[in-house]
Amino acid sequence: MDDTFITGLPKAELHLHIEGSLEPEQMFAFARRNRVSIPFDSVEAIRSAYSFSNLQDFLDIYYAGADVLRTEQDFHDLALAYFRRVKADGVVHAEIFFDPQTHTARGIPFQVVADGLAAGLAAAEAQLGITSRLILCFLRHLEEEDAFVTLAAAEPWLDQIAAVGLDSSEVGHPPSKFSRVFAAAASSGLKRVAHAGEEGPPEYVREALDVLGVDRIDHGNRALEDPSLVARLVREAKTLTVCPLSNHKLCVVDDLAAHPIAAMLKLGLRATVNSDDPAYFGGYVADNFRAVAPLLTRADMVQLARNSFLGSFLSDVAVNAHLATLDAYVAEQGA
Ligand SMILES: Nc1ncnc2[nH]cnc12
Ligand SMILES: [Zn+2]
Image (tube, rainbow, N blue to C red; front, side):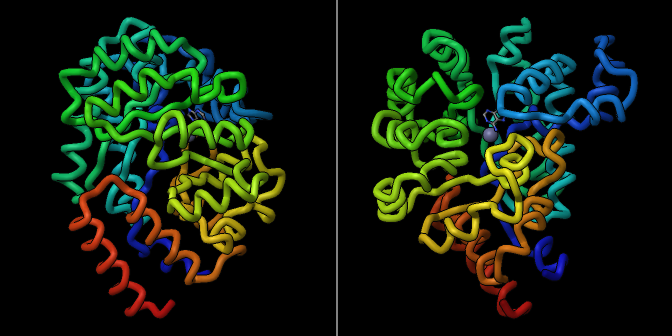
């Protein structure tokens, strides 16, 4: 696959944790300017600590790394650096998760996180022309009561938040644990998404649909174990935000060469390709496309890009404008 075809393909990223874009170099820079000590003495030492055998292994390091984020400027800089990076990957729109509880639990006010990120998103649109949305994720290893406190703290920023999501340790924390707070978010006009079927069983994907009323499933790999669930996801055109490099690094798949992305497209699922936590998993969105390119045709790549716009929370007018740009790109490149 011609690499310029991948990077030139206009695309939306729908599964990106902004805290997971914290590169080791930035971790050092933020630690220095905030006078926070970190348990590493070099960028190489940080990178070599990034070896995970499951989701929890990763989460332990990821939450520790976030400790260097202290000020509005840090959140602004983190977000803007992500957008600068993915401009070269052909990203024209991104819907970004943030984990407020990771920060409020350390005494960083919700306002610092939200205002810093919102300023970074506005700067990215002004400087780079990339549009974006914020998705507030609840940490599922915490109690639902904590999620309610977070939703209440977010109240003044709800016009800047498109959706709520559910992330962190999946197994043992089913979507139904958060049924009431998702219902409250829906009443406030927020869209809903949830990580499901990354390590958890197909039943968690069903619960995310039935109990939380999600518009998208983040990951969804294990839905493939249940043909009737697959049929439903196809029938309801539910978007799956799939993350190949993450799946490989967290041992959700053993071998990238056997990643199910091609099978998902063949089944008619609205799959998309995303980076999840690019600083930890070895690549941004174009790297994820490259990782599965040997499994896909050019038409599949175009379908993935099309799905990213169809699955976004953009208006129909904006989606159609992006699809027209995509069609023009395909006509010029030949797919
Ligand atoms: N892949 C992932 N799964 C669950 N929670 C996460 N938080 C950040 N990345 C995550
Ligand atoms: Zn994720």
